[in-house]
Image (cartoon, rainbow, N blue to C red; front, side, top):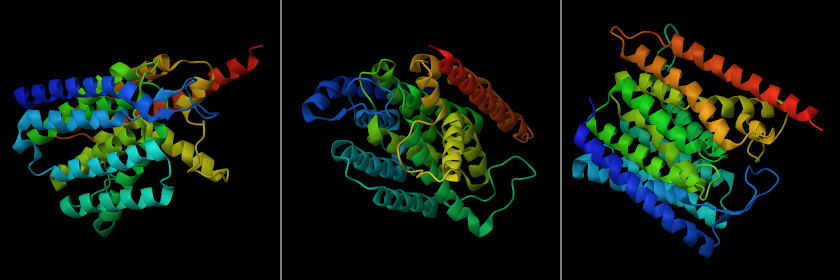
Length: 345
């Protein structure tokens, strides 16, 4: 069960710190020239301050401390260290924009390797039975690939108002409720929830502040690495729960990248072919897209919690089948919107 008082302190403290830091960052970002200028690939029309990820990280870390003091850091300090490093690199990228893809990838891989070498990799594939096969030696590279992949997909999918913040909260809650981890992870999860809630006050459409790379790198890293704090026997279930919570980010990102790669396109280049971007281009506002995706994720989260908390634990085929069904529905909805928009005079 969650540690109620520490979790509540973490939630409230993180929300207040994040909200206050965001409010200060909006005019400060304008003074520093930390503005996201719209271009042909953007979903926004006016220059908007960015760097809100720094406020999210400040809220998360201070809320984490408020919820448990020194005990909150014990055993999971590497998560904070990795998130801070990536957040700082992302903030530099937001300010200067001169960090190339290769240095970023090498840093992400190094931090992911540190997490995996510290706590261990996967023991079995994070798939329902009978595909939960032992991976032996491959458990380490697969775990590193998971962390690096989530960090980059999170960065790619952070493109419309309110999307990344709400996905973080959804993923945290599915993970916590499905796995019932030890108190330090509950405190971290509540701190993440509060920090993202404080940020969403300013990021909901029409956004007054974007999180930028400082937020997408650090949040992607924290979410991807959290399952590795679990006991080895629970690690693959934790990855499965996190993947279900982040389903639209991971599935839309993966399928879109595969489709672009098959077309011979440079997958690391910015584009507007993710589902949420196409829906937005069809005339649908972010404050309609994000709630629709959240409504579809709610049953997925409940199915995941039901499957993983059943005694004995049930295979995850029900949540996985529903996950692919809502992905297919999202593709169909997008195609219908695009055809309707094309017929408009």
